[in-house]
Picture 1 (cartoon, rainbow, N blue to C red):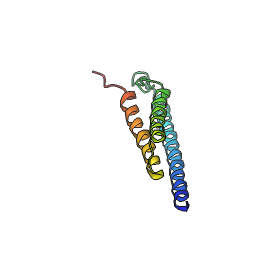
Picture 2 (tube, one colour):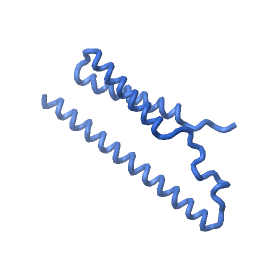
Picture 3 (cartoon, one colour):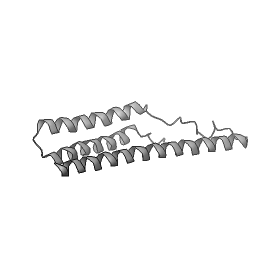
Picture 4 (cartoon, one colour):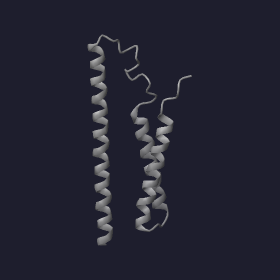
Length: 114
C-alpha cells in the first residue's frame, strides 16, 4: 500500500510539473511573439504582409482537447473492461493519452502550402 501511494504522489507531482512547464512555455512564446510584433510595428513594417497574425491555424484548440480526452477515456475503458494489475492500469491510460496527443498533433497540424 505504501509503495502504491508513493507512486501516485510521484505521478501527480510529475503531472503538476508538466502542466506548469507547458503553461510557462506557452506564456513566454506568446510574450516573445507580442514583442516581435511591437518591434516590427515600431519600425514601420506592415505585419499583415509577413503572415504573423496567426492565419495558419487549421482547427480550434477544442478539437485537440477533444481528441486527447477521447484517447484517455478509451484507455480508461480498456482498463475497466480488463483485469490488469494496478501498476499496469495507469500505464495503459497514459499510453492511450500519449497516442491521442500524437494523433491530435498530426491531425490538427497545418498542412504545408503548395
